[in-house]
Image (tube, rainbow, N blue to C red; front, side):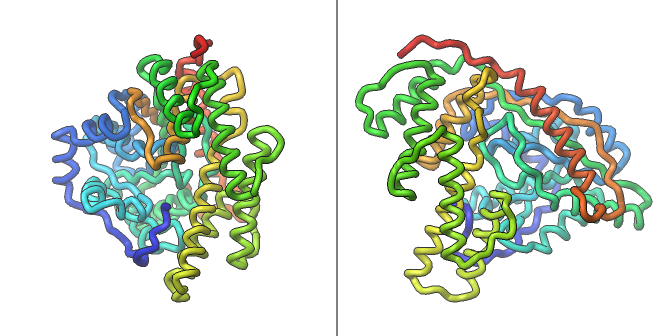
Length: 408
């Protein structure tokens, strides 16, 4: 559950002491953490000179990466190391509540909190101040949340360009200089063949489902079959029975049921058809009721179940159509899908498969000082989305195509 309900939100400011980031980089603490916790064992930085050029000019710099894994914020410590600069990063508040050590570490690395379930003026003002003063580059993930779909860019939130434009106006007024935005594509590649790992992990999931004997087949076929089984279990849980149709149709029906039932119980009107916006609205509503209306214990249990339903809808949205049903299936897509299913079942994924991170910078996008035009999508957001989509699409082709495996 990503919504914190045991205490009301309090803004967590960044640690501005540069000694901590220098210490962390000097002793390669990030490298060790990524290897042990995320399976990321190597990396390469591409086109880093465009980032160095922006640093040399003294621009206010907003780094806007795609967000496909929990490792992403730490992976961006590697280009920061090579560019010899500390960074700040905007991070969801729940990350500061996963234990005192994690909270201590991410704050000293430059992270500050953002309250995703409501308005957070302090976080916005902090981000705008950082960009205006060009104190350090600022990392903001424009997708807002993460999933394990490396080859697909989720819809971008317009808050990233709102902050950038506001900072550009202030910086132009006070310093006569500019704010720039660098799109960054992060792609994780499997260093070795995945056959042994994938077959072992699928066998564990099949056993958990009560399949005492594997039905065999290719890795792709087994992965799809397990995904169908897990979806069927959710259908029985929330709909009472399994439904007909292909995976994407059944997924969409379940998502609509989860959201509409929760919205109805919370007496919410659906003013936005965007599924992720509806999930955010549910989280905001639950948080508001919890901390302002003093619900009794029975209602608190219902509110927790509302969050569970919203989180499940968010998880299901993250499974794109045809990700495993086209000629473009790669080993990294199989790994992502298996790890997502493991997280759904047990709350954590097996990281026994070694990954290589590619971090590619695109050239700087000058941020206009003017406000975004009304009535149309912000052109700055459109350019960011187009560039990220192009980079991700190109990098996706570097993954190893899934070859025909022998039946198990």
